[in-house]
Image (cartoon, rainbow, N blue to C red):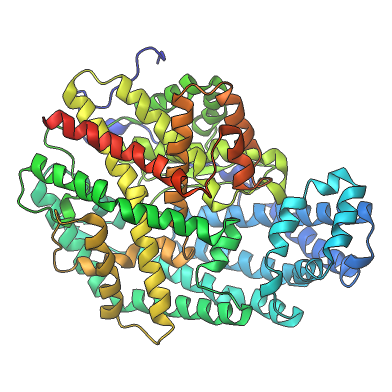
Length: 607
């Protein structure tokens, strides 16, 4: 589709699942052709031997290595990471395609057990590394430029020095992990995937039921919300047990590691200062009245309601077209937006569609939500969607493809340096969404289409910024409360509701049953305190996009350089070429002002 005529999502046309067209599925053969592939057994055998050889060659000897030998040590560790990552990527992606398949679940557990066993002898590596003196490491870096390239990873590893346990305890925690957090994660995933919701005589999974909350028919939205509340409520004791166990496990490990707060480990992993996250959190909470409160009051008027209910939060506007967006149109929409920004960006994204790197359809047992998994740097990322043809699904495609582009560009850094801290990992994804949104806004033919697009984008940004910071506050309260003892489901429910009214505002009232909606959020289980990364990414991208709109010279080139850096640079270094600094409290206001400006435009349309 030519760039000069942006595709529109709001024409009247056929609807129904058949209108989506053929949806792609993953071809995982770039990893392994099957669970019994000879290459897989070969790699497992190699990995077991390589780990044993690494421990034999280096344990107790890191302090004696010269610069060349240390570089060889790092490269051997990278190779081990690449092979182990390839195996677990294959096992994990197969599992997420159908989490209720017992064979896939067993295969993933077996691979996890074997790799954990093989890699236990490597636990010494970071422990010994952290016992080296700073002067010793600096001298090694000065002697070998190739080794010095890895300085950022050494810095992040050594940030954990004050929180390091004895070698024996670290090995125990590594070994025990397969029956600790990862086992509870798997129980959560399998429970969520197996949940069944009954509506109008039809049995639906979680993804399809949540999707009904964006239906035009209000009665159907309400029925879906009440059915979600019923099923979550029936399972709330199990979900409370998962959360109680994981938060207690984290509290125990944090106490042993002398972490100053439950969030501190996440900040260290994200390579971001706690005060920067606190500045973000405070800026967003202070902005609730001019963002979510103001927008939802507008939406209440548009929907002609005295109060919004939870099933109205993501409701389409009355004038919004219900047409489903076929897959081919979604593809061209996103690729066209990427191409308008930079042809290189579309070129990197295209193979995802053509080579089986996307799994898009909603299927029984498939994990809910969407993600981009980078696998390992010598293969390529895979994107998972649950595509139902809503305009929001097109934005989700743009988002996950942004991750994919980022992961492809960062791959040249190698296993140690490619991985981006979570705070920066959302940059390319949110930027991809913004490009797609702006392209669609250019193509709006009427004020009503513009209004629908603006409102949709504002809602997405509120979901990304306001909702995720409310999630973060909930987690902070949850982990703090758990330190005082076991939490009943009612106690967790009360913590959840304590942040909902504050973040959504007075336009809302909350149905009985909404208090259990914390139960299905996977980030609380898989990655405690992950959620602020979304708000960080959105705020960062809004500020970045403002620089782009101001016509910053060479913006595209600087943007690609930033993505190529992967995890090789701190956020201060990455943002400096754009004249931005996330440690400046005013930085977050710059990003939030973009959302506020869109709400200003929507309010002006009412005048």
